[in-house]
Image 1: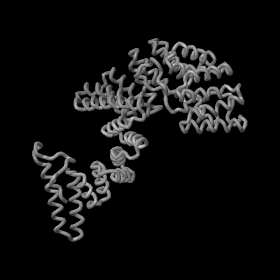
Image 2: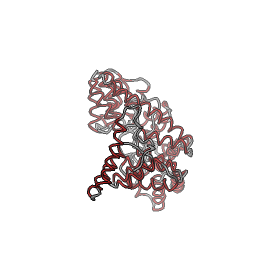
Image 3: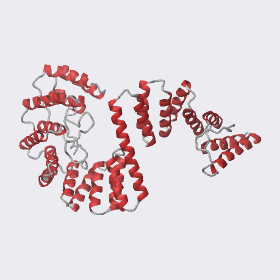
Image 4: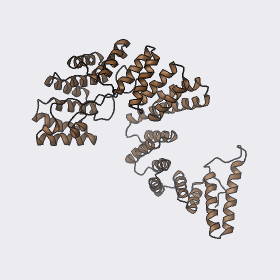
Amino acid sequence: MRHLAVSGLAALLLTGCGGSDSSGTAAKSAAIPLAIASTKQPEVPVRVTRKLDDYPAEIRTLLQRANAAVVAGRNAVAIESLCQAIGQTPDDASLFRMRADVYKLQGENASARADFSTALRLAPNDPDLWNNRGYFLMSQGLSAEALSDFNRAVQLQPMHSAALNNRGLLELADQQLEAAEADFSRALEADPKFVDAWNNRAFVRMKQNQLAPAMDDIRQALKLDERYATAWNNCGLIAMRQENWEEAARAFTRAIQLDPLDARWLGHRREALLKLGRFEDSQADAARVLWLEELKRLSTAAQQSPRGVDVWMQRGQHLLEGREFGAAAQDFTRVLLLQPQNAEALAARAGAWLAMGDRKKAMADCDSCLAIQADKEALSIRGDLWMQQENPDRAIADYEAAGRFDEKVAEAYDLRAAVRTKAGDTGAAAADRSRAAEIRTAFAAPASTAPTAGATDPTFNP
């Protein structure tokens, strides 16, 4: 169920017709089962009262200013520009619809609803406007009012694919499965490439235990959009009901690849893996679900305390542990915007850059951190960076300062030994090889006596 093409402000200004929602995000539909998940909608144009080129120059300037403000995340500025445009052309329904979209982005839902209603008063025979307001109302949990709007859209345009799909979602939520299937089918008659209607009809058919037709539908959805994570999830659910555990596991795996931070896919794959007797893999998925639950907790805490340095640090470290390096770097950047001299955040972000292969940024963060304090983590990371540049002298110096003692350090000695051998300094080379052997021998010792990787070695003396 894709977000209906509701006159995205940016798309409208750039193309002169409706596009996807300018927010780039989809709102959750109230009471819709999680297995349906996506709220995407078809990429169909929305009728507009006038095209951009038809507006006077001063109105075009205001709309372009509003568009730039939305792109920059300055929604209040966009609203002000649209208010000025409406003041000059107060009978243009499309301007009220555009402002409603920005009010939605701003979270001013009462104002958004008022503008949708004004647009409908000005253009009461536009089925797209009825569907747009219906979708907005559905996203606010106002199902009865949304249904009324979808009905009106269908009355005006009996084969309005998006309105039929949206009405089907409300019927599905109300367990009116036959009515929902009928509306999804009519949506597909109107638009055979409507990938979300294929997905939604597959889901409702699965609910009715029509497993073979459901699988046919979901395969058609994936043929149209192979990157549709929710459709892959539903493919897995249908395969589970067919007791085809291998296909189910493959489908859930693809959903996870496309949307790795959604715990539902992992929970479903875990069930399939248990059926296949792959207990170790299922335990790994269970652990990842727990990791995602903690991420959700930290995310909520960060939203509640957006200037809380500690919670952003905790969330960043948690993301690092989960190998979500890009997101971790963003969180550490948030910390540094609040506390530019936070050495811990600089060192942690350097680790994220290193994991992503951005050596230049990693080195810059290490140097900035070490200019503030002698941080062992930054020294260790910088040592790894020197190793990647095949500079064992500097790597060993940083490892020594960090008190690091592990295989990577042994590799640094081996590399320096090779450099010294090539230079003819056989005595120093032999000492380096001996030191590398000492380190490896220590790690080959019984677990009760072997030092921990990264631990301080009191005898460390390159």
